[in-house]
Length: 241
Image: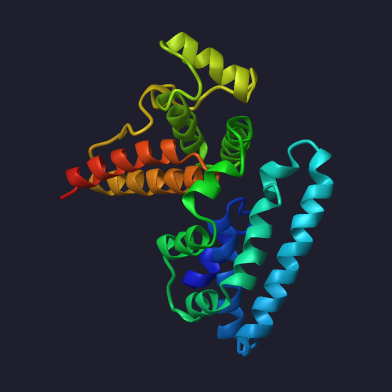
């Protein structure tokens, strides 16, 4: 499998700005390899049109239970269309690169809508709702449950959800996530940055998980939580040196 096909598959059901951008980027690269995408401008025009149409459809279908768990709220697709429209040259440059980093993609978004505006786009209730939806999505994907546990753990660590002991943490988990779903690792609710092994390879995987969580919190405007995650990432990276 080519690296672009892997990026495409990994972000096929993306629900964040970064994952949706990666999906369009990988689509372009795959078509380019096949000799089908010769005009970057036409491709980006098509991406913007698809993003706008998808955003409208998700808004209309929002009444369907759990629809946003699989496909996002539509806000992320709207951001894609807006960034393509207003930062066209920067987007073109990234699409023509052989590799693109999450940092470069995030810079597009935060240059376009600054940190203050991003944080005021949603209130805390909406941000918590998006967090819970993402946790439920993690629980629907094989191998992603611990990611959901860690996200909930950071909501607790940031005091956005109050719980002071193991039983309270389990109670609020069931209140928010559902009584029929148990956390895959209750230790991660108390210590979301916990490394479950001493293996260097596993430590690097943990760092990747934490970076994904930080990205998610930044994208929904919970920058105070993202800052807590960033502190833990720096500490974990210092252990691998």
